[in-house]
Image 1 (cartoon, rainbow, N blue to C red):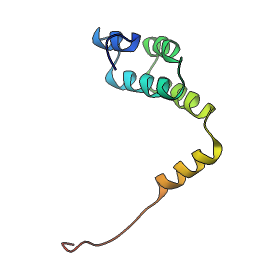
Image 2 (cartoon, one colour; image 1 turned 90 degrees about the vertical axis):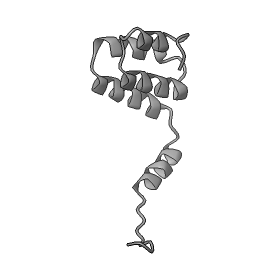
Image 3 (cartoon, rainbow, N blue to C red; image 1 turned 90 degrees about the horizontal axis):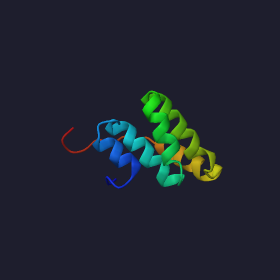
Length: 85
Protein backbone atom coordinates (compact mmCIF):
# COMPACT_ATOMS: atom_id res chain seq x y z
CA UNK A 1 0.00 0.00 0.00
CA UNK A 2 1.56 3.25 -1.07
CA UNK A 3 0.96 6.80 0.04
CA UNK A 4 -0.79 7.48 -3.27
CA UNK A 5 -3.94 5.76 -2.00
CA UNK A 6 -6.24 7.54 0.46
CA UNK A 7 -5.60 4.75 2.97
CA UNK A 8 -1.83 5.03 2.55
CA UNK A 9 -1.99 8.79 3.03
CA UNK A 10 -4.13 8.43 6.18
CA UNK A 11 -1.74 5.81 7.55
CA UNK A 12 1.28 8.02 6.84
CA UNK A 13 -0.47 10.95 8.55
CA UNK A 14 -1.09 8.83 11.65
CA UNK A 15 -4.87 8.89 11.28
CA UNK A 16 -5.11 5.07 10.95
CA UNK A 17 -3.55 2.15 12.75
CA UNK A 18 -1.75 -0.53 10.80
CA UNK A 19 -4.60 -2.92 11.63
CA UNK A 20 -7.17 -0.53 10.18
CA UNK A 21 -5.12 0.03 7.04
CA UNK A 22 -4.67 -3.73 6.62
CA UNK A 23 -8.40 -4.37 6.93
CA UNK A 24 -9.25 -1.65 4.40
CA UNK A 25 -6.71 -2.84 1.82
CA UNK A 26 -7.64 -6.50 2.36
CA UNK A 27 -11.31 -5.74 1.74
CA UNK A 28 -10.66 -3.42 -1.20
CA UNK A 29 -8.63 -6.17 -2.89
CA UNK A 30 -11.68 -8.47 -2.85
CA UNK A 31 -14.36 -5.79 -3.18
CA UNK A 32 -12.86 -2.98 -5.32
CA UNK A 33 -14.26 0.46 -4.72
CA UNK A 34 -14.90 0.00 -1.02
CA UNK A 35 -11.80 1.86 0.17
CA UNK A 36 -13.34 5.31 0.63
CA UNK A 37 -16.38 4.01 2.55
CA UNK A 38 -14.22 1.87 4.82
CA UNK A 39 -11.76 4.70 5.36
CA UNK A 40 -14.59 6.96 6.53
CA UNK A 41 -15.82 4.19 8.84
CA UNK A 42 -12.31 3.64 10.22
CA UNK A 43 -11.92 7.31 11.06
CA UNK A 44 -15.12 7.41 13.10
CA UNK A 45 -15.42 3.96 14.69
CA UNK A 46 -13.47 1.11 16.25
CA UNK A 47 -11.30 -1.51 14.60
CA UNK A 48 -13.86 -4.16 15.56
CA UNK A 49 -16.64 -2.38 13.66
CA UNK A 50 -14.33 -1.93 10.67
CA UNK A 51 -13.44 -5.63 10.72
CA UNK A 52 -17.12 -6.61 10.92
CA UNK A 53 -17.98 -4.42 7.94
CA UNK A 54 -14.96 -5.63 5.99
CA UNK A 55 -15.90 -9.26 6.64
CA UNK A 56 -19.49 -8.58 5.60
CA UNK A 57 -18.35 -6.99 2.34
CA UNK A 58 -15.83 -9.74 1.56
CA UNK A 59 -18.38 -12.51 2.18
CA UNK A 60 -21.23 -10.79 0.34
CA UNK A 61 -19.96 -11.84 -3.09
CA UNK A 62 -18.16 -15.01 -2.03
CA UNK A 63 -19.01 -18.26 -3.77
CA UNK A 64 -20.72 -20.44 -1.12
CA UNK A 65 -18.98 -23.61 -2.31
CA UNK A 66 -15.54 -22.01 -2.23
CA UNK A 67 -16.26 -20.51 1.17
CA UNK A 68 -17.24 -23.95 2.47
CA UNK A 69 -13.99 -25.46 1.12
CA UNK A 70 -11.88 -22.70 2.73
CA UNK A 71 -13.64 -23.18 6.06
CA UNK A 72 -13.09 -26.94 5.96
CA UNK A 73 -9.38 -26.52 5.14
CA UNK A 74 -9.01 -24.06 8.02
CA UNK A 75 -10.44 -26.64 10.45
CA UNK A 76 -8.19 -29.46 9.31
CA UNK A 77 -5.93 -30.85 12.00
CA UNK A 78 -2.97 -33.14 11.58
CA UNK A 79 -1.01 -34.76 14.34
CA UNK A 80 2.29 -36.52 14.09
CA UNK A 81 5.48 -37.16 15.99
CA UNK A 82 8.80 -36.20 14.59
CA UNK A 83 12.07 -37.97 15.50
CA UNK A 84 12.85 -35.50 18.29
CA UNK A 85 9.59 -35.85 20.20
